[in-house]
Image 1 (tube, rainbow, N blue to C red):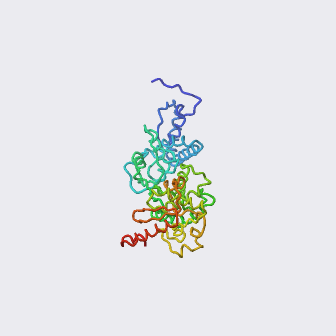
Image 2 (spheres, rainbow, N blue to C red):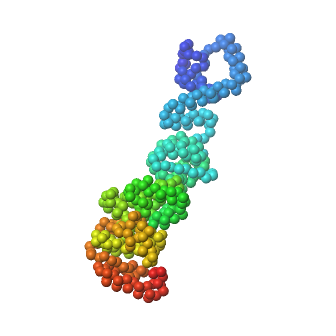
Image 3 (tube, rainbow, N blue to C red):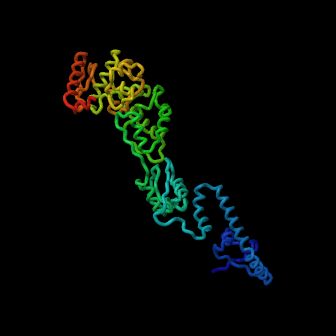
Length: 414
């Protein structure tokens, strides 16, 4: 090995190749070989005295070393996050004096991680450390970067364990069974009241839902909408544990808008279309094959200036959403805004939440001149469509006979 010539311009003990050598030696670590200068006897005596003094003041020296490291760390604060994370691991290794950069094993106690839409791998790494799942955000992030195939993270609330190894933590986050979800199925024709019951069953606050319902326009509904009714589209929704009531309702409304847009309904026509479709669905029940004909009856009556005379609207107005049967007194009640026996035109709002079939029927009614329809078999949904009062009266008589045929039939007519 060739000896390095002595540099008279450098301070004694300074490492030319590693300017951090002095700082690192404060921690007792040797960053590499440094050639010792030739000392005179006087310099040797001074060196021995300095060593003795250093031993007596060791604590002060170590404190000084920590201060220098802290200053270095503060300086890092001015750098970008990526540089900080790149250097954080080595610096922590120096400070921890060789502690491992990650936990080992599959974890201990329960821990929760919330991944929001748009979170990057760096943000998720930091959240994992904050939750106590992994030991070091930089270590976990470095582990991610080293993977051949970068993982895709799904938003949601994850039930994990604290003190997991990097590999175990990643596997747990990618395991969808660890993601807490709330599934709600909204059947076609359900009312808002019925839908809210389902939402409450999976943990949404009844009082919060009621407060949100009082301001339907916040969800982008038409200006003349008096309620969310008609715009909570029937479908199955899966919400994670972090989903708010506002987000859940907005998802349903947005799904309704998507259906209307797909059918070519202009924004100005949304309210009328939804109201008509809600009547069609409620009157048709499960007998979807007659929806287009029911739509034609309602449109023919509107065109002729006739009252719609829908029992379903009357029942909705008095809060009897589980039936379409009404009494003579209810049909005469003018205080019921939804009473189409006394108020002309469509009701002021929807009476149920229609799906694709009812919406399409409202837009594409069947061809015909019918002005009446009557269900004559409540078990099968068989319906008679009539053009005249006489035909309609005959159909009502047929329904009455069916209700009287047996106790089973009578139960449908109660």
